[in-house]
Length: 284
Image (cartoon, rainbow, N blue to C red; front, side):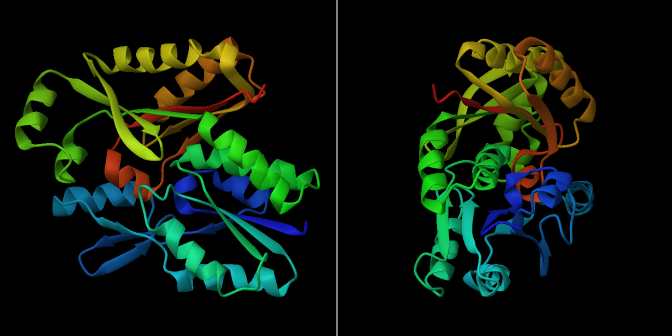
């Protein structure tokens, strides 16, 4: 057990086996249907989320962990004499970061460091894994934060959303846009820019065409890629994820191309069959 405990929240979408293997603390966000609150990944998984949306015809609300949630999660490790580095969901998307900062003030100075990933999903996970490996190498919290400061703007996050339905349910597109988009088979592509989910462009046509475009975009950046770790993150698109994984593994020569499943919070905003490729650009 190292002196530094790395924390993230449930939106980091790291594989559960990795969370266990690398002793990563996870603070779940909340998903709310009516008066019922569920902890993302604890009380509710993604297939169950979609079942509830189908049954109610409505999307849930999502909420950040409270400062008290963070204090409860951090306290046992502080009491054990460890320092905590928490890497949060983008402050542009949620109050999660601010609530963690509030919680950090309840501990002695230097015991809890909160770092804003300015990203989501495994765009956070990439930064968490950089921190984990740096901690294993004996780096201090300050040294790890300096590394993350350099890595953060180099994270590339690009998702293809398969249907406009969840964007419509969430009030992010009109009924007419949803109808026309469905008729023309339009799939929006979302990128994370300056910590925000930003519509990048639209792909019209088959899903295969959309996946090919997503893959081509990533492959065009091979000279810039950090070939340590690439993620394919998806919401109930297992076959497509494996296809992209094999293609990226053979063409990039990356040390690891990993597949991860999007949790409830990410899935509730994007919908089923959403899939993305996430990687960092090299620091060199």
